Image 1 (cartoon, rainbow, N blue to C red):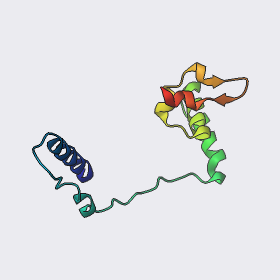
Image 2 (image 1 turned 180 degrees about the vertical axis):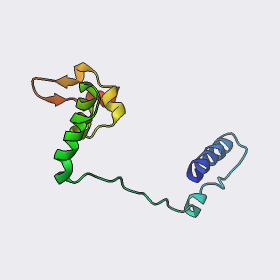
Image 3 (image 1 turned 120 degrees about the horizontal axis):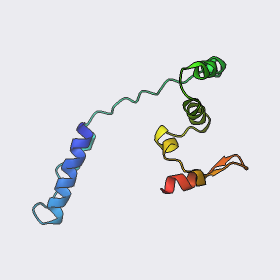
Image 4 (image 1 turned 90 degrees about the vertical axis):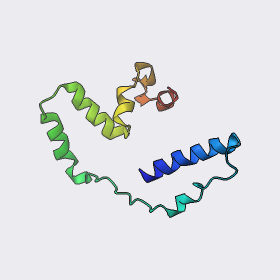
Length: 106
């Protein structure tokens, strides 16, 4: 939150400088006063637990489309939103490929 607020203040100051209201940006050096937020890595599933996980995915009371989506996300590493926005013309079913370049240009 502090970083976002500082960024907004910096944009306001840049606007003020561009329009002649200020000659300096007092918010410019404040970024060094902020504490670095510790990044917490997400937990991963050990390879030895994968067979049991896949059994649970298949046994979960849902439709086949959901099961396939979960497995496709695991195999490709794409975000859920990227999978949901995928189009048929991005897939080469004969070549077993998903053209993600096309997907990212959208």
